[in-house]
Length: 253
Image (tube, rainbow, N blue to C red; front, side):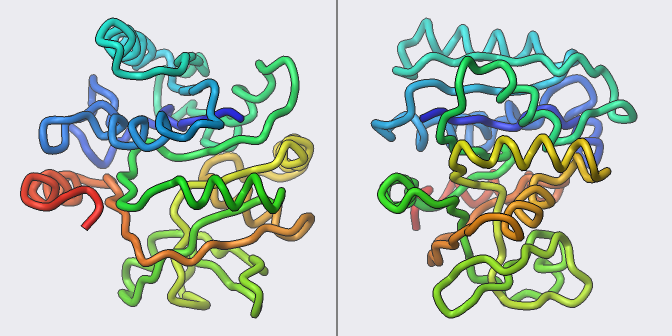
């Protein structure tokens, strides 16, 4: 099983902090944003390789970061950095196309954990990974969110009585539920064919939630309801809020 971290965005809403530096490497409570995610993934015994996809502008930043992690012995699994060859926001591939780029580089399809590396997830991945491998079905996370404004800025799930995903509404004006879906997905190898078809037939390559919406109409996608939260580093205010909170709170409250 592999992990793929999406790090190829240009984070224009965080300028000037990210004008020449990648958002996932910004420090939060004296630790790069991405390190919180990598630490949670590295303890999963079934993950054998970590793939990070970035762009040409920030490729060297991630290579340096990975080299420092390896030299310090901080990560026990190989880290592979992929360059999507874009150099500006106007020509970005988008998260879905970046995921495809990584998967096409693999010698064979594998189960995967896919996450956006600008989020700090305040819950363990262990139970999620165990359920995913046991049930052999695609799995996403459902987090409770009652703030309507926040629901309008994220993916929102419509679920049936058995917590199968009926729809994933990306940034809906009228949210269909109070269950948000953060960009953390456990996907079976069969997802790869649907990913290729989506990109070949529809112009929705950016937000990763668009792929889950496409996938759930073709194969069963289950949701795991959790009481945890996540910190989405989307703009300057949310960045400073995350830094302040994690300086005085544990990662898992």
